[in-house]
Length: 146
Image (tube, rainbow, N blue to C red):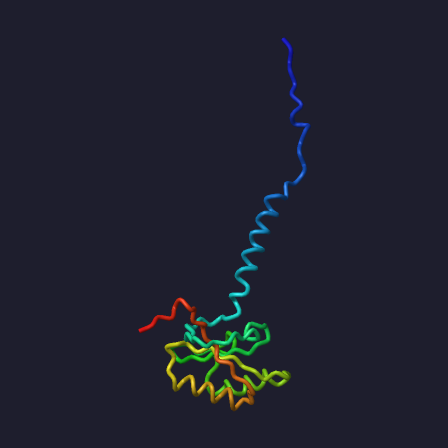
C-alpha cells in the first residue's frame, strides 16, 4: 500500500489582485465628479423662469457671493442662514478684499416681493456695485401662445 502526498499547499499565491479595487475607485471618482458641481447651490430654491435670461458664468465660481431667499422668507449668504439685520455687514465684509463687487441673488419664485426687496436694499447698502438676479432660462419649446 502506497501513500500519496499532494504538494498543492506549497504553491500559495501571495499576489494581491488590485483590479476590483481600481474599478471601485474609478466608479467613486466618476460619482464625485458628477455630484461636485451640484453642491455649489446649497440652498434649494425654485428660480423664476425668464425668456430674456442672460447667462452669468461668474455666478458658478467658488468665490462668488450668492444670496438666496427661500419661499418662507429666510435669507442665506452662501449656505449659511443669516438674519436680515446681519446680511449687509456680512456682505460688506466679504467684499472688503475684492475688486469685483458683484453679488448674485437667487430668490424663490414663491418668495414674498417685500422680503426680496428688503434683501436687495440690504445688499445695496453693503456697497455692492452690481447685483445679478439669477433666473432659469425658458426653453423655446416651453413658450406657448395663449
